[in-house]
Image 1 (tube, one colour):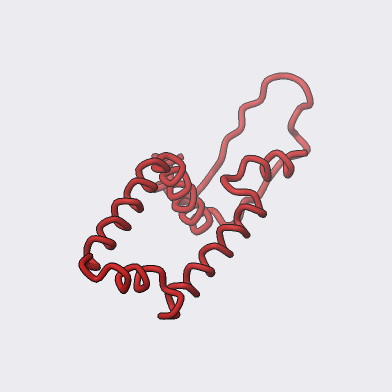
Image 2 (cartoon, rainbow, N blue to C red):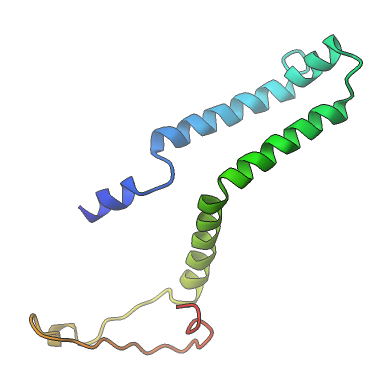
Length: 122
């Protein structure tokens, strides 16, 4: 049940991720072929428009998408950063005395580690 719960809490489902990948590769194919490139077709049809205007529009759209999704993006970036740092420093966790944990009553868990850099982060 824990795996299902974790899987449902991801930012993208597997199907959404696949759709995003297909859309990305479709755009790459469109931009790589001059005959299908929508920007070059648009500039050919409207020669008075400078390519800089289209680039400015694209930068503006990208900025808007980034600002609207800033919170999930920052969460994802922090998650990746801390996961990579924690996997470097804490790649091996050993449990000693597991059989001594009482089934009922209060318990205090302590840990011993050699890296003091992570104290402030955890």
